[in-house]
Amino acid sequence: MKRFIFSYTAGQLVPYIDWNYFFHAWGIGTQAADSEKAQEIKRDACQLLNGIKEHVVAKAVFALCDARGDGDNIVIEGTTLPLLRQQHSQAGRPNICLSDFVAPHGDKIGLFATTCDTKALADEDDTYTHLLAQTTASRLAEAAATLLHRDVRRKEELWGYAPDEQLSPTELNAEKFRGIRPAVGYPSLPDQSVIFIIDSLLKTAEIGIEFTPNGAMQPHASVCGLMIHHPAAHYFAVGNISEEQLHDYAARRGIASADLHKFLYKNLHK
Figure 1 (spheres, helix red, strand yellow):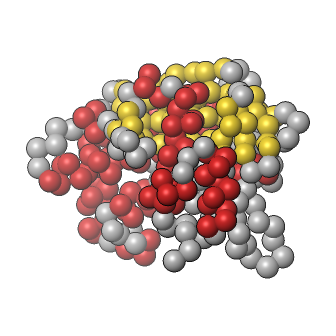
Figure 2 (cartoon, helix red, strand yellow):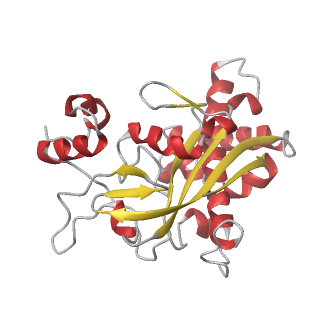
Figure 3 (cartoon, helix red, strand yellow):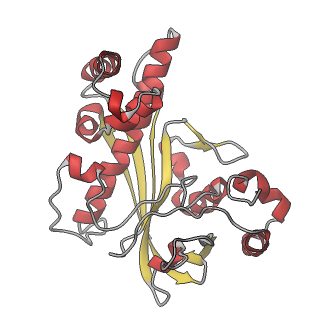
């Protein structure tokens, strides 16, 4: 395993902010992104960021690990990460699992986490400032993941599987690159509790991330997940799973099925 720690200033990250998700956090749809209300909030966020351009606002940890696919599991540095497989894909398409994109006879996988503390942005002395700092911090954590992933793909000392990649920030946010970085809690990796398995290797405490008993990250503006380099890898939603798959998954996790219900309630058949 190769492991790296990074720090990012606001100035480094601003070009990689996806403002569409910022507006979404404020309940502003894509069609209203050019409205006066939306632009006023964005101006306030930019003013906040302009005042701290040289300040370190985000940190990241990345680990490049030996891995192999093993059925519906990925074995990472000898640690098994159980995963879930789609059971209801579209007609003519296979039911996929993230492990399908990791070679069974030996491969590499990246583990990553990024975080931004709202205290690095502003004193939260009123409700609006608090929400502005919180939503801006979330975008900075995601921007750090975008910048980290770009460097991981391009730099040989990190991984360098796409050294000739030349993409603009807009193209990066549109995910025009090779590979994916599924985050814990997202549709292809819906069980928040697997974050403890990932953290047993990644050691996110070194960049200031802590976890609640349910696997929620503190600071809230944090992202943690996998980096997969297979050229055919793509995002998908696990969707609904049956009790049969839940029991199989629980057995692979070594956890009682009942204890996983709270993490997978959105995926269980109603």
